[in-house]
Structure formats: C-alpha cells, structure tokens
Image (cartoon, rainbow, N blue to C red):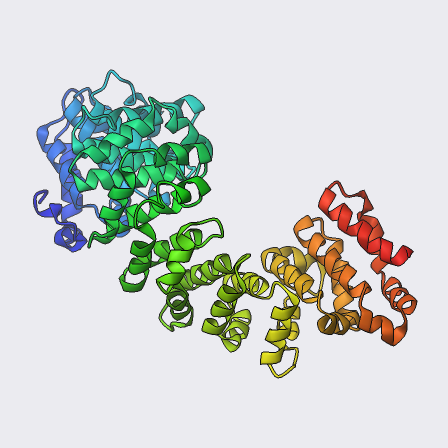
Length: 547
C-alpha cells in the first residue's frame, strides 16, 4: 500500500478510506500489537500505511474521527527511534495545513502530559536529525495556526533545527523538506524571517542549493528565499547577491512545470520590491519578457496571478524593465486581461494595478496609449464594478491618467462634455463618518482624484455649487486619518478659490457661503494636527478665508 501511495494522485489510495473497515483495523494493529514494554514492528508498519495514504483534508478528518491521535501516542512515547519517527511522520501528515486537526492535537495528552510537549523534546540534538526535522514540522503547523503559544526559545529551536538540516551534509530530500517547512514556518512573521536569516548565515547555505542539479531542491530554495526577501531590504540585497541567481530564475520561468514557475515567480515578487534589485540582478537577465509570456500563455491560475503581481513591480516608475515591457506590447496584454470575461478577479486587479504603476509620472504618450487602449467607456465601467479592489485600483489608474488640466478636459470632451466621471466617483463618497471609516482605501483614491479634478475651472465650479458634496468633505475632515484629510483639504482649497463661482457670486460671497456650510470651522479644528503636510494644507486653505 505504501509503495502504491507514492503516486501523487490522492485517488490512488482512496480505497483505504472507501472501505469502512480498513482504517479501524489499521488502528487496531497500533494498539493490539503493543504492550507496556515493547511496540511491535506491525504497529510501526500500520502507522506508515496511515501516513502515506493520508492525502486530503477528508482523509485527515477521517483519521481524527477514528482516534488516530490516541492510537499513535504510545508510539510517540516509545524509546525506540523507529517508532518515534513513524509516529512523528504520521502526526505531521494529519496536522498538515489543517487548523481543525491541529486544534485536536493541541488538546491531546498522553499519560497526563500534552502531546505537543512530548514532540518538543524531539528537537533536542540528542535525537537523530530526521526525528528533529519531523518534530519541527509538527510544531510548525501548531504554531502557524496559533493553537499553541510557544515560548520564544522553542520557536528558535524549531528554526535552528530546520536551518541545520538545510546544510549540504544532509540528503537532498531532507534539505528540501527543511527549506520548504522553514519557509512555511516564518512566512507570516518579519521578525522570524530576520531571526532565520542570521541563523548560521542561512542565505549562504541556501546559495549551495543552486549548485545542485536537483530541481526540487532548487524549488524549495526559491520558496525560502522568497519568504526571507519579502519584507526586509537588507535581506533582498543578500538574496540578490547569490551568484547566478538570475540565470536560475530564468531556467525555472522557462520550465513547463507550474510548481517550478510558481517558485521562481514568488522569489521574483519579493526581489522586485527592491529598487536596487530591479536595477541590478534582475536587469541583467531577460526576466521581464519571460514573466509577460507566462501571463499570456499559462493556463494555471496561480501562475497568472503571480506573474501579474510581478509585472506590477516591473512596471514601477524606477524599473528599467518598464520601457522594454511597453515595447513588447504589455499595454495590450494587460487591457485584454482586464476585459477578458474568464479572467480571474485577482489577475484583473493586478492588471489594473500594473497600468496604474505604468501611468504614474509617465510621459503624455504613455498615458495616452493606456487611455486609448483601455477606452473611456471601459474605464467608467470599471469604476462601477462590484469588486471594491477593482474600483480602488481603477480610481488610482484614473488619477494617474488625468494628472493635469489637459487630461481632465480630454476625458470630459470624449464624453460629449457631460460630467459622468464626477457622478460616478461622487457615488463613493460616504453618507456618514462611520461609513467613511469602512471603505477608507477606496475613499482615499476618490478624494485624491477629486483633488486632481478640482484643479480645473469647469469641474471646480460644478463642485463649488454642490452643497451636498461640500458637506461630505466636511464630514471626512472629522475622520482621524491624514490619508483622507489631506486630499479633502486640498479639494476644499480648490473650491474656495473657484474663479467661475466667485464671478457668479463674488469672491467674498463665495467664501461666506462655504463658511456658512461649516468649511472654515472644520479646517480650524485641524490646526492642532501634528502632521506637517496636513497643517500646511490647512493654513493655505484658511488664508483664503482670512484674506
């Protein structure tokens, strides 16, 4: 059965779980084959069968329901290494990426002692390193799901166990398992990433993974490097300094296997967050074109999501790959993804984000190319999409596309002179202060866009006569969030200085009307702010009223 289970397809051993008698009989072998003094090889073999056939969440749940934890506990407490190893491997498989089973294990005891405390003992260097590895794996699942709060020294022991086993003197399989498990263990913690990096100079240890011809070992190396470089710039520098890293990335991007493509893309996603890496390690190899090709030709959802995310970084203003990608036709590729009916939402969001990055401080030609390729009708449709992330990124894109008066006038002209854009984005202004706090990401983009739009005379005069709009800006000033307050103040300043509105009512009458609405009073409340940028904006706005 174990030999048959080496097939990655979970259906290859599904018969073990389809027959209701097999699991109970295997578990019975664990208990009936043991005594207080010895545990037979039959119990060990039965445990191995349960381990290698457990491949899905349903399998894990079935084993837990049949009492697998209580059955393997005596094996775990055995003095024989082969029994300890078999039980640790089984425990790791049952708890693998599963919060519910981890919770059960966290509550389980044997002879009055918590099972996880017995597992902690196996981290000791007195045990063979294969036992240390599987003990660390078990504890990593319990830690990630937060079902047990480990002391700092235990967490450090887990990291040290993984790092030691990453060294070249161990088998390829052990190194691969240690690297993958360590990546999972520290993935969500910048502090643990930093701790792991300084443990026996981990990056140098991982550099030796790429001197090996084993592709799976390189894959695990990329996964761990992607985690190490995800948050800290100094670690991105260390990772980028690995000799030949760019060539290894290209090799994996060219692979036909999706898991290898994913590993390379994850590493790239971390490295492309660094200006230095974009201009050095990644600029010297043909990474950008390969990423775009994956985005176009891959039919794997994970690959396309990752490739689109990497493109977002490659299209940043300071990226040397930006011009090459534009030349390769990336604008059309991204627009096709945005408008594709079968495109995953995450890919659509990233495609809009990529266009937003590309348009930031771009030349008039690039902005015009993006605007023409997407089309004003598509832009307005995206602004009304039910997905909040799509709306937020589209607002950012719109803000970058109409960064001066001529851009705004062109947008209005294309709509026959109407102000649909104002109507659409105004609909995202909240009706109350409480609502504003809920959708702050979208609201920030809306306010920044209004700050852009209100710099033009035509739109400025329209907004100045809209008491409801002004009232909503006033309520936003009361929210303790400078990301929202700064663009709201700028917009009010533009409205207060509206030449057309002042011609209609007179400058003083215009200011008096805004003051009656409560603008001046709301601005004065912000004079106590400690944010220098906000304070400067407030003082400029108040000068208009005081003059």
